[in-house]
Structure formats: structure tokens, C-alpha cells
Amino acid sequence: MKTNNNSGVILVAVVCFTAITAILALGLLSESGSQLKLADRQVRLEQAFYVAEGGAERAVSCIANSGGNPPGVITGAIGNGTYNVAINQLGGGGQTWYTIASTGEVSGVKKCVIMTGVRQQTWARYALFYSGAPGPIWILGGERFMGPVHANCPIYLTGNPIFEALVSTTANNWGPGSNTNNVQFGQGWQFNAASQSMASVNFPALRTNASLVVTGLTDISLAGTNLLISNARRGWNNVNYAASNAGILTNGLIYVVNAGTGTNRGTASVGGTLDGRLSIATDYDIYVTNHITYAVHPTNGSDDALGLIAQRDVVVRANAPNNLSLFAHIIAAYPNNSSYSHGFYVQNYWSRPFSGNLNVYGGIVEFNRGAVGLTSGRGFLKNYAYDTRFATDPPPMYPTVDNVYQWTSWRDKSP
Image (cartoon, rainbow, N blue to C red; front, side):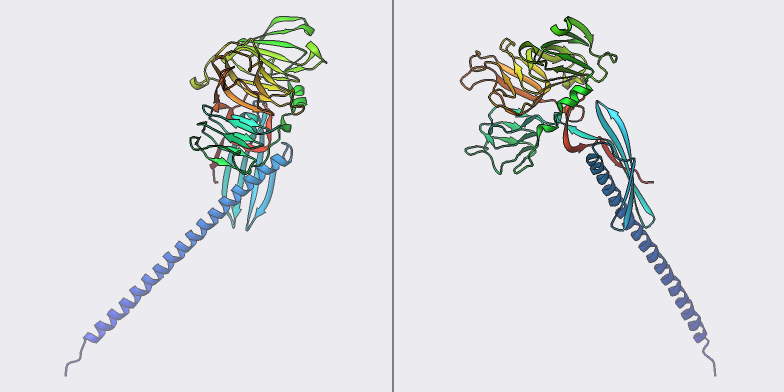
């Protein structure tokens, strides 16, 4: 009788199949384990990234809470991770700038976040800011704002004004009777916004930090890179100062001090064309007597910048020319008797014949909103444009907004 040799072959085949299956299973288990490890690492990387972000945010808070003098390194924990943040101080434009490098670590995995150009925002961030005393603000058809607008009071809207950036108000709605059907909102609006104080416009600090301090009525004529300054108390009559001379104006800030009453009040008269960067601050008023322009228009790559910072009013004088151009960011901060404080306004606007456009290229921050003309045809029509450069590159030594920070760049730079 013949024996069946196929049984041996079958046994060998079964053994081989089992071995192959086992090898494949081991391979799958190994691959599965590798995938799990990769997934776990990815989770830890994401966690470390969020910890690094959190550390950077805490560093910004630390800068604000320390009055701008933070420690060089801060550490802490968020969840199951830790952060180590290096804060490096730099100078720039009269402000302190910071670089923040935050490293987050979770279970041995690290991620690093770098923030450069961290600094307080200045009041030049606003196309229009209205503190709200003594009452509401009216914004009419034909007005256009290319930067942020904020009011610490209701805003009454009529006609077709254009807002290209966010509009915020502390009120819970538009003023009664407002019609927004034809209003253009580029970035929407915010009701019940936090009230903001102009108290951070620190005039004693501006005076202390100024490169040039003069007393009493002062005339400053902008003549390209030169400044022609007249001041009776110093015996100056069109004394020629180089606007870019680092030995004279090291930080580009001039301050005019009050010396009493009458002609000794700290008032500056300004007009002309500026080729450079300058801020003028006063204890009293600033008078605009003529066109104020830049050597190069801001839309053509200009590096010129002017800030006008009055503790009381910024006034377009009655003898200023028609179709006036005013290239500057303006602060009129006086917070006392409203009968003497009109913010930014045109002198005798109610009796001045129609004078064409008032062309403001910059921005206006004021305690009270002053008038520049009447709907009956007296004075000027408004033609206001925000100088968008000022959002990141304000005039020199410009006052900062409390506890509001910005930065130039943010990037992931992991080790």
C-alpha cells in the first residue's frame, strides 16, 4: 500500500504560512507602535507650542505690569508643560521695544515662539478718538476714516460716512435718530467697548524727555530739514535749527512751556514743509497758521512724520489759507473747562466764508470734538485721511496707550 507523502508537504506549508503570518503580525504591531509614538510626539509638540504661546502672552503681561521694566527671564508652568521666556529690551522711536523668545516644553519635547518689535501702541493708532466730554459725537456724510475710530460716548450717524477700520463706542447702540442705511463699515463696529482715558498722555514726561524746551509763545516754521524758530524770551528771530541735527534734537521732540499768562503762555505756531521726523508738545495751544506738509507724500514712500500734542487746543487760525493741508497726527488733550476746550477746531469757523476742504492727513485724538465749519456753508469741509504708517511707525516720542501692546512679527522657531 502506498503512503500519502502530501501530508508532509501540507505540514510544511502550514508551518510556513504560520511563520509568515506571525512575521506580518509582528510587522503590523511594530508599525502600529511607531505610528502611536509619532502620534504621541505630535500631540506633545502641539502642547509644547501652546505652552510657548502662553508663555509669550504672559511675558507681554509682565512687561505691562512692570511699568516697562520686566525681568530678563520669566519661567512658569501651564498644564503639564513648562515655559522659559527671555525678554530683551531695545530702543526705537522714543519707545522701548522688546523681543520675546518663549520656549515651551512638554515631556521632553520643545517648541519656540519668537515675537519681535513688541511695544506699547501709541495714540497715533487712531484715525479719530473722542474722549466724550461734554456729550455725543456726530459723524456726517462725506467723512471718511481709514483707521480705527473710538468714542467714549454715543455716536450719531447720518448720511454716508465711510469707516474702513473698526468703529467702537462705549454706548450700547448708535445715538437716537441715527440712520446707518448708507454708512459703510469696512471692519464692523463694537458697542459697549471699554472706556479709554487720555490720562496716559503724560505732559510732564514729554517735557522731561524733550530735546529742546522753550518758554512762552514760540513760532516754528518748518523749512525742509531746517526749523526756523522765533521766541522772544530767548531773543530768537527765525533761528535756524537743523531738524535732523542729532546734537540739537536727539529724539525729535520740542516742548513749549507755560510761563504765566498772556504772551508767556506755552503756545506754538506751526506751518511749512517738514523733511524729517518731529513732535511738538505744548503746555497750552498749538496754532496752525499755514499749510503743513511733508517733503514726500506719505503714499510715495515718505519717512517724514509730525506729531502735534497740545495740552489744550489745536487751532487752525483765522488767517490760515483756504483748502488747507495739514499733515500730522494731532492730540488735543485738555480735560477741564469745556467752554475753553474745543479739541481740534477752526478759529471763527461760524463767520469764516466758505474755505474749501480742510485736508488732514494723519489722525485726530481730542477730548472735545471741535467744529471746522457749518452745514450752511461757512468754514471748511472735512477731508480727513488716516496716515496708515502711524499704526506701526508713529511720530517720535509719541504718547502711548495704557496696557495696549503690538508687535512687528511673530514666528515659530522651534529648536
